[in-house]
Image (tube, rainbow, N blue to C red; front, side, top):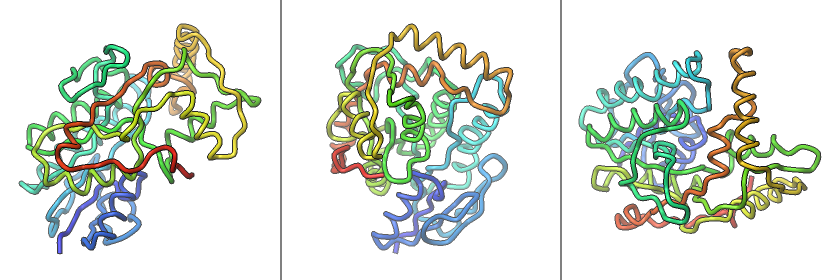
Length: 299
């Protein structure tokens, strides 16, 4: 029987991976600060120590510090300690075991031609926030160590504590303002990501984009999520420049209120305003097939 160590198993993505591994008959080690949904808890503070991976055959690294902290903030320092230094600690502890490292499409350079799918060879530079920068630095360590690195975009699904809650929080008076016109973008169902995590230890080392089989029109996708949550709202557009100026103002305000992330950031505006479709053919060639789509989304 295979033993799978899942870091961050108490979190959104990690909990789905841990549950999926158990459903396949694997023993599961839930490595992190809190117990996961199944298996045995192995306490680990990614910012301070190496994890105990004794008994593990495969390691799936989902643990990460997420968010959009201001440059120079204490939260940014924590993000580096977890996403970069924590990765180095994990790789030392893995000691040659297969490692699947969950990264993010946020590592890609913002530039790109609209409508042209972004492949794994796209430049990894110029990230717009600390999350993107630390994930890029962490995955560079993982790739150098021979790991499989997965790059999902905008992971959604049951239990999501980040993406959808932030979207719903921006509904005001029955109106949701989105920056710029409608664009095409990739999203990643957490079930599709979990499936990739649990098979990727057998893939060739390297980076792989992970997303749903189809790309979505942003506005239609947003309306589908709102309907699923029973939220009635009209989607309206504001100029990207105006949204960017509002984000700058929120970031300035955030600097005088340390300890709190800004209500709006330029990274968030970019994520919604710029279409990004991922080319997932490399992962498909390994035998991975994404079966879930936004049509099956349920909170």
